[in-house]
Length: 218
Ligand SMILES: C[S@@+](CC[C@H](N)C(=O)[O-])C[C@H]1O[C@@H](n2cnc3c(N)ncnc32)[C@H](O)[C@@H]1O
Image 1 (cartoon, rainbow, N blue to C red):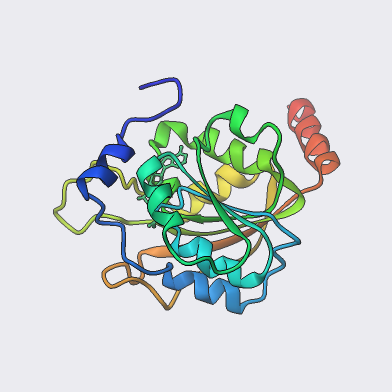
Image 2: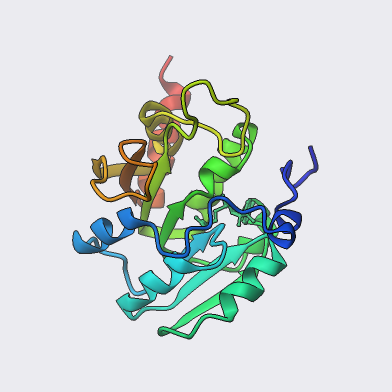
């Protein structure tokens, strides 16, 4: 695997049109999250792995700056062809690269099919990247694809499966869970296979205290 944790040539997949995840509309569960009136903060809101940006444009209705990020230049160029909704922009970049996020902070992050696209060996880096780019009190809102495979299907990814327990454990060092539910709206075929989690980033002081307790707790 390369140093940037990339096993899949996403750019090539967009160029070949091999994009079965592309549904031509925002993730239906995002409407449920927006309806909850969670506190997204003043922005900007980051959407890593945004693809053609349907979720970016749905979030743009909040009226705060939104940044869609994707590895694929072709995906970003196609996202930019859609009519502007409000204050949204798209960038080419690697979310796992600390250099990309070194000078950026976001008030919230929307996760949808980026976590499941990344090799499971990179999930610690993903969780660290989420924590790193959010302000204290920032919102991590995501719909996580738990079981991407049909029975009998080859279980090699991407997408890669996960569990609620894994998600809670991965984000626990930096976040408290504030809400969670199984969405009632889904793309056809994804019904009951996704899980929405809303997490609030703990203040840095509290995180440092927790780390200290773990260090002395033996
Ligand atoms: C399964 S696709 C989902 C795209 C979009 N979220 C959607 O549902 O249409 C995964 C996307 O994540 C992007 N991606 C994968 N790893 C990434 C990374 N490390 N940083 C930024 N984007 C990444 C890919 O280029 C691809 O567009």
